[in-house]
Length: 438
Image (cartoon, one colour):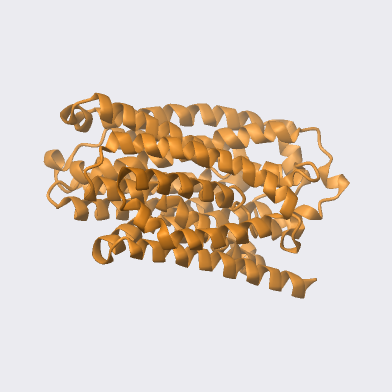
């Protein structure tokens, strides 16, 4: 997957470990379907948290305060996700991956549909806030259970010299999910009256998310439940270890893995959720038009994710991630001015941001997690992913909007810069520790 000493787990896989009847391309399809469905669900909620929930659930507050509270509820899923991982790892050990994923995706779909039927504050009062918060927590717990290990399996079965290419495939789900979610909301916002949209139009994307989750469930179950894949998981030792044992043995790798992708995760929300809230609250820009800009910019991000796979195979994943973090740090210096420069500046901000996001996010999955021994990789990768999203993304929209509203957009740039510094520091430390271990 990479040519750096910090990624020894992937590079040390010998011919006997790569032996298997399942082609990497088949694993890649399952990974892409699963990640796209998860990110579509994610972005449907994220967009609604900006343009729907402040009005539906917090109409008794001003628009900014309502959006900040909406972002606070948005963060609950990231707090709940590690809890979900702990619960569903136990289910995995006892009953297998098929049962775990069926329960998790059923819970995710139920929570998503529950949000689609959510009554507003004007009908049921403060109970609307509690129902939304409970549904969001349920989504987070369910997402902790959707970890199927296919990304790790893909990394360990990727052909020599093509590991960077296969590593970026799971990350394609983010821009793909955003493109569909943004286009869907843009259609309803642009073609319905405000009354119809806030009455029933916003609910349809949540029903679509439920339908996509059902399709993804069957697609992924077809893979993980077959005898060939069960044997492959067993032979690669990709089995759910106990979380306590994993943390005792690999706490340093988990910590570094959680902080290594912070640059891309901070940028992730700085070009997806946060700019939508800023434009919606502080400009006269039409929200449907900006959603189209976001969808088009995500196409550039999709292309950049592909490019990240090529570059990682040529120069190494670690070099690409450090270079991307430096570029993100530079971008943080002038990004706020672009976002505040009208429609043209917004478009430039979005396109540049998504290109940088694609290059960094395309290889951020498992930046350090690939150093896990095989016995702990399945559980360790899940925990690392949960913590990276919690620290790097969970509170990013809330923090960026709160800082920007009080101290100006330049403070959002400072927030992004802090993520880039964390990534560079974590990658440097991981190399130091790897060199000492060697």
